[in-house]
Amino acid sequence: MPHIDLPSEAPGILGLLIKYPATAKPLTELAQVLLRGSSPLSPGEREIIAAYVSKLNGCKFCAGSHGAAAKHLLKDSPLAEVIDDPLKSERITPKLKALLSIAESVQKGGRSVTEDQAAQARKQGATAEEIHIVVLIAAAFCMFNRYVDGLATVIPPDSDYPPMGQVMAEQGYVRQRNAPKAK
Image 1 (cartoon, rainbow, N blue to C red):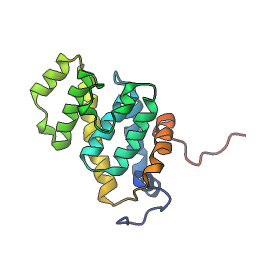
Image 2 (cartoon, rainbow, N blue to C red):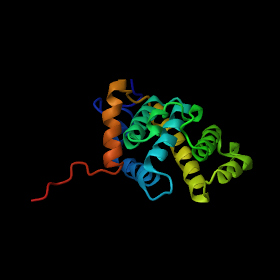
Image 3 (cartoon, rainbow, N blue to C red):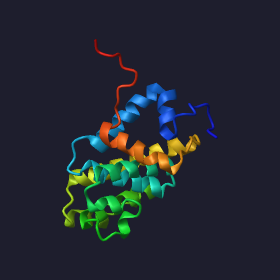
C-alpha cells in the first residue's frame, strides 16, 4: 500500500508522474535524454544499465519495466537473453561488462568508482562519453528507485512488465498525455 494517495491503476513511478505533473516533466525528460538521447551506447544497452542498477537497488518495478524495455529493444540480439544477470554472461562484451562494473560502483556510492575501473573501461574501448553516460544513468536510477520504493508505490504482477516495456521501448519517456486531437 503506497504511503501517499496515488492512482491505483498506475503502478510504480507512473502513479507518481500522474499525481505530480510538476515533477513528472523534468523526470521524464531526464529519462528520455539518458535512455533515448544521442549516445554511442544503444538504447538497449542503456536500458540494461538502468535495469541492472535497479535490480541492485532492489527496485522491482524499475528492474522489471526497464528489463522488459531492454528485452524489447534487443529482441534480435543475444543480449536480450542476459538482462537478468548481465555480468555473469559470456554474451556481454568486455566493454559493456566494464561499464556495468562502473554502474555497480555508482550504485554503492559515487566515490566507489575507481580509476582502475575507468582505465579498464577505456582499455575495452569505452569513450569518455560512454563512461559519463553510464555514471549518469546509474546515479539517476538510484534516485528513481528511491522515489518509487520510498513511497511504496504499487508493484504490478510480472505479466504486466512485457507490455509496459514495449511501450517504453517504442514511445520513449516523454509522451503526449491528453493532447488535443488534431482537426
